[in-house]
Length: 443
Image (tube, rainbow, N blue to C red; front, side, top):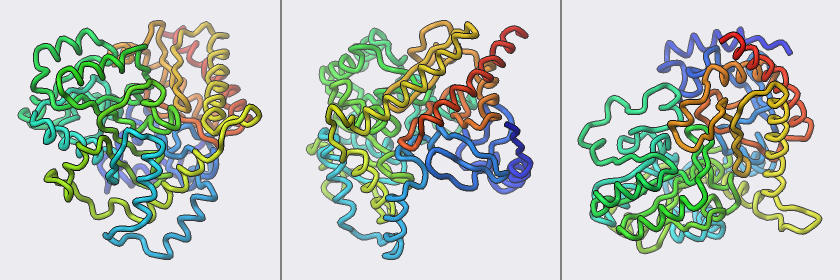
């Protein structure tokens, strides 16, 4: 396949004259992998098409929300009808309650739910609430976990911060960073040590139960349960950031898979059905401290707007309505099986070239590391071969397969991906892995 990016290259140059770095979110710049990012013109199903007319099988899916695929007819039709009634009222609607009720049914730990517009807003608001509820100031996060770009959490963060080598962002005051404690993901010994020293000062622990922002990294067996036990022992709140893994790992989120009930949960991505929506929620006695029920202030003019609520309602209903039977596996069983099919095919191709890779999968999330060692935290993720990943990424892109443009990001399967898409992706990987093998020979 011949891929040309002349129009995208021109568009990127022009964008840099008006937008910092030419993009409105850093990882889109291809800063980690190099080259010109395709400027996308449209999308449908499992495909995206750029302004040069190149078509790609898309495994980014707008970083997770497009679980049904792009421009899913039921979602777009509902949005077309909704927009005729107005785009925003700044007043209560029945749609907000309907989506909150759906979320509560699928994640019962979220007894009360507050809608916001982004994952950053959700985590920021949840931490403010945790500090107010506990009367403590310190929060604890895990190295390589990214929870949005607000000051408290841009300390040893993953995702775009890791991609661009900015784990501690300029502009974050020392006084704020000093209240953020960090420990290694999956290291329960270190976590216990920190709690033993400062547990009485910790308001909350915030964690991605399945980490998707240092590449896809899974929790070790029993780890999340141990984190839950420590927070209960010391009176700290446990916040699950399921903005990425919620409704991706399973219908009930990672908390349903690992059997750990957090005090608060942050959601995003899928609950917006492709529109900017996020939410935080949890125990009723905690959430009732949020204004106007309580004194902890948080507000947003566009929070719960009718278009976003419409897309979220349709999406959640579609992914949860099919009951499982022996003859008809449910939506998530089928989506997980598709993802496994792809990962096994990629592994088989890599094995032909005797490449040492670590493949990870959680539901419809997947990722790989070019490393001969297990990857279970940020340090081990950083030790994987970024040059090999970049070689692989560009070889796949040239063949019309669009993967996350960074070693430190997860990729996503959608219901729209077909067996033909998966077969084409596996075939493309044979060429890509051959180039990686050549890369290693040239090192």
